[in-house]
Structures are given as structure tokens and as C-alpha cells.
Image 1 (cartoon, rainbow, N blue to C red):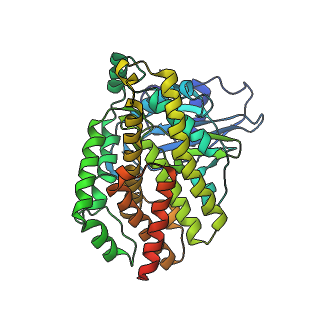
Image 2 (cartoon, rainbow, N blue to C red):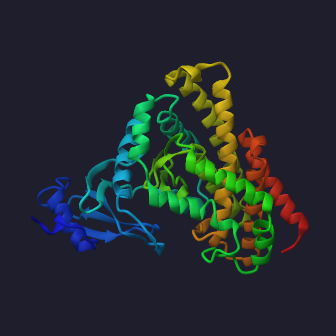
Length: 408
């Protein structure tokens, strides 16, 4: 019996003791230091370093409430889900996720590869850095993980077993509330509107009953469409990156849902980076973002159809014309999710630095209005948006609309 035989939240000193007891990762004469490095909304993340030899790893522990708000009471089982999903993703998309060394169901924590030589993608994009491999890497990741965990490829009973294994009740409820519900209703006291933009948002979002009808349809699709094993929170804050490599992290929201949810989150967060670059007048950067969005949509479609031909096992899915219909539905839903993510990060509780770091209040309000105007089009016109060029055209049209109104 050790003090790690019963759950408690660890501090850095506890983590050092834990690593010494539970892992053989470090050398016997290691001189360990530890610091908490997490700044996310849910978990506690520690980096452990051997100061003598330079080896390092990450310990991630789940608490019983979200760090963003004590209102969110959560099961620590999300660490099991994250650890298992990372190991599955590594099989499906080798090299695109960190390695997992240990999962501990008692302490609700895991040990994994340290990616300190990478940068969080959102941080890099805030510095207007560009990454030529990103579109290729992220589309490989999404196609492999989404298509290969669907009924098109998997034996159906095995897929249903995975659906059961990855039921993620509490974190799905967070998504259902913060993405699909609260940003569209004025009576929610968790929404946070930017000063000077309140009345415009109330009129444009809260007052649009057609928009709210469409989001209601989308919410029930999200809750009932167990299509693929999702990452569930695939934004630029969940990606470590450098010029030659991409690593996707933090799949604690993973569950079986519509594959468009992952794709749309990637696209929306690239649009947030575009909005930041646009506000700062960096044309080269916004051009790169536009090209990257076009590539993400285009390469996903190309790789999806190729992988379908290589991997499909379901007889009816081989029917002529079915794969094209299936993919068109995914792209339309991707458009809708892009709009939902753009709205919830501006109106709702969980913000993004791409927008909040815009210091000039008028430029921030303009950026928000461009994103929200585009978001409405992404949701309402989703069946008409078929290519990456179509997606980029929406944000450019929104930019022109906001500037032409001169309502700042």
C-alpha cells in the first residue's frame, strides 16, 4: 500500500514521487524537477525533467471539476478515454499523436511523451507563423481516424462495442450546452459579449429565429449520429506543431459522433487565425490561411475517397454514387460546425486568444462581426458549400459586408 493507492490531486512534489514509484522511464540516478504547465480548461498537466540527463515526460491528471468553472462536475474517466484514444490514433495515424507510457485508473492520470520542442499551434498562429505541412498532416489524421472507425470500414458489432466504450456523458453535455445551445439564447448568464458589441450580437444571433431552428436540428444530429470516433475538441489549441511535424493532443472529449465535428473545428479555428491576421493587416499570413483552408477541405475529400476505395468493407457502401453522397453530407455538416464554433467562441463562455488578444477595440468588434456574419452563412447555406474555395469565399463576403455597412 502506497499513498498513490487512493485518488488525490497531485502537486509538483507529489508528481516527482509518483513518477519514481510508477515508471521506469528515467535513469536510476535521475535528478528530477517538476512544474505545472497546463493552462487548459479541464485538467492538470505537469512536466517532469531529469536535470542530469535531459529526459522528460508529461503527467496529466483529471480533477472532479473543470478548471474553467466549478459548475462543471466531471468524471475522471476522461483520462482513460484520452489514453485509449491516443493509443488507437497512433495505430491509425502513426507519428501524429504523442506516445502514451502509462495510464493509472486509481490516480486518474497518464504519462506521455513530452512535446516541449513543439509549439501549441494557436500560439504560433498568433505570431503569424506558417506551417507548410499542416494541411497534409491534419487531413491524414482526420481521414484515417474518422473513416477507419466508421461502419463503412469496421465490422458493425465491433464498431458498436467501441461506441459503448467511448460514451463520454459529461464532456458531451459540455459540448451540447456550450456549442449547440447557450450561444444562441439571451437568457443564458454564462455567455460573455464584448463591450460595444452587445446589441449587435443580440440582434444578429439571439434575434435570428431561422438560425436557432437550424442549430436545433444540428444539436440533435450531434447527439444521435454515432458515425465515427471523434477527437471531440480538435482546435488549434489541441495541436502541437513545428515546421516538419504535427502532433494532435488532448482527445479527452472523444466519443462516437458526426465526423464533421472534428473537421469543422479545425476549419473554424483557422478562420480565427485569419481574423487575427486580418485585424493586424498581415496579408501574407491571411493568404496562407486561406490557402490552408482550401487545402484542408480539398485534401480531406481527395484522401477520403482514396481511402474509401482501399478500406471499405460494407457491401452497400460500394454501391455506385454512395461514397460521393456520403462525402457531400460530411462537407455540408462541416460547414455547419464551422459556423457553430465561430459563434460559440465569440458569444459563449470559452473564448479564443485569436480574438481576445486584438487590443484595438474597434478592430476586435469588426473581427467578431466578420466571424459571426460568416458563421450564419456557414450554418444556413451549408448544403451549398462544396469546396475549400467556397468556404474561403464566405469569410471574404462577410468581410465585405461588415466593412460596407460602416457601423463601427
